[in-house]
Image (cartoon, rainbow, N blue to C red; front, side, top):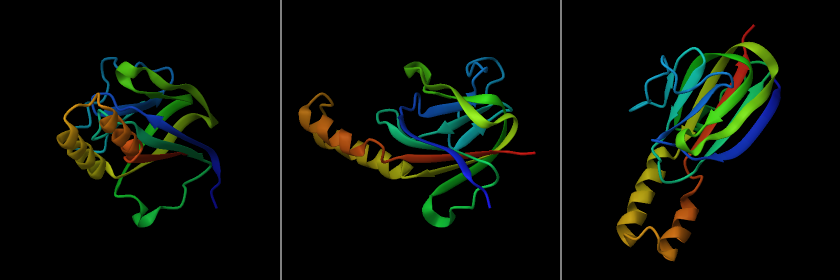
Length: 167
């Protein structure tokens, strides 16, 4: 049975409706980067995973887990799922684009190598719908009522990224 080696829970602000998970030594904007994940949950190349969000106004909740082997599947708990493989040199970064890096160089217990990755998502469409309704109801995003209601939507869109070393 697999063991979870690391779990990190954090808010992430999607820039241009995406955030990126990549090897810490990689420039996510360098030539050869994946195409933006328009209409899909993820877009990948060998060292980068770009996660598509439906948000560009709200923080989303991200949970990253490293496992020592393949974790048990979640079943119907999540609404969307995608899988990929990444090559990581033992350190992981989460990039929010123009907002900077949420994580720079998180050390992975499993070290250098190929990693299998599962990405799960939930409440993507609901968060987008509720934000649009909020904007339609208030029209002034600087108003106190709007800001208080917006805080209630922060973290509604959720992601779980599980990774484990493939030997």
